[in-house]
Amino acid sequence: MPTGKYFRIGYAVALILLIIYLSTLVDFIFTPLVILVQTIFAPIALSGVLFYLFRPVVKLLAKKCRRCSPLRLFT
Image 1: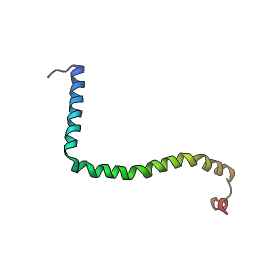
Image 2: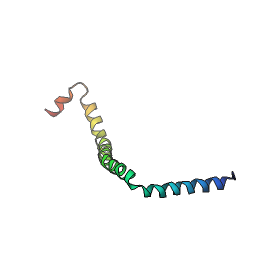
Image 3: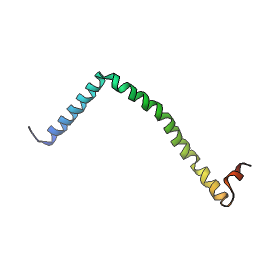
Image 4: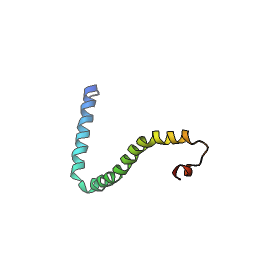
């Protein structure tokens, strides 16, 4: 078996394409996984966006009210 650089790259590409083709033939395995990822992705993405949006507000409130209780901010 040849061990050249381009042969190994071509061999890897051919194997990846073969794996992709064979995975399309067994939809009953990947359909539940796709549904699971779609279900979990939206809440995680939304929480990440909200975290970075509210991070400056939390830092500002933490500086402003070092000694007071967090409950006093809302009363």
